[in-house]
Image 1 (cartoon, rainbow, N blue to C red):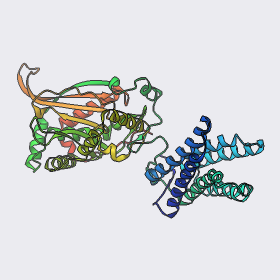
Image 2 (image 1 turned 90 degrees about the vertical axis):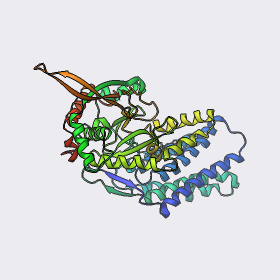
Image 3 (image 1 turned 135 degrees about the vertical axis):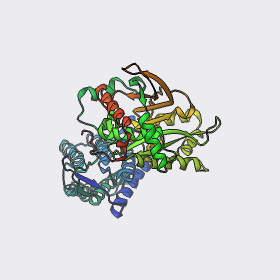
Image 4 (image 1 turned 180 degrees about the vertical axis):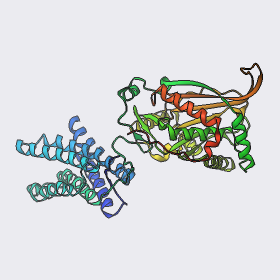
Length: 472
């Protein structure tokens, strides 16, 4: 992997706070100016009021939310602001002035984007780019406007505040080089995944043709012989893991499968394909008590592809016990309760807004960490209910690409080649998968590998020899 430059804000220091203050003042000054104006034409309203205010507010939100690890996102409001300035420049009386300003705004957009995305390994070029026009604006242009009423000065002051905000940010940002093998986030990445940019064309196009998970799901029915698994479980329980069972073996095997076949840990969002790399998020619905009136809740446990069966058991069991022993609701319960307080029509709009934000990767990470609809795998045990496994649909909201359901144990009498009859024990396991993340051959290879692990589960006691990284 090539080394790259990473720009970030180490903290919200004085310069960063000053940048936020300048941008907030820019928005406030423009809003006050609009409030004192008579009715504006529609074009001027959208181009000179809505567009700059959108750039101001977006800049503030992105800087506060993503300044430490995704500063490159501030290029979005910078481009919006440059479009606003370009529209304004088209109204200048001097053609030379218009052309020079358009060239400057284009240079600002391109150079700022190239800098914060790491293509230009120094931010010093930004200092004169923002500082000199700001000085020219104050020393030359604004001197010609002396004597104007205060109200007419408000848009000029708003522009100066924008320039000051960008100058302060260019002074506050810091850079470092990526370490060997370290991945630096880029435009198009999400806070819960890395976009895969070198997939074959059919994979890049398929999310646009098959737009939802429900219309892209495949169903796989599998039968797992568990003689070795039962001996393995008994050994673990004798070692003190009293809750160790089929669920933990299946989870450990699937996590090990992600180490060998990282495509299993991909997902679709915004009609693009992403991978989670070393973060495997497992979701499961559980009850605090095994009764029909006991409420459901959802747990989410994060694993690493290098985790052994013991680590998987300990981490998962701790989470289950934490939920069952908790007298109060979990974070998911509180989130669902907050949604329940919103009136129906407003809730419908709110969910639509969440879907839009999720499409563009703008949902806050704390929400995707709580959401049962975001993750690597959703697993459910029908064995605890004493019934066969179901085929559970994938959710169109969120990005979970695989749903696994396994049922109760069943006994089968099988005839051997020599004519003898033996009794074997199986569990049925159904998978519903999003076919857009990998092809059928990949899934089949992963399933064969999964069977090899379940036939000899002691392999799960040692870390994998290698954790394969998904392609770029």
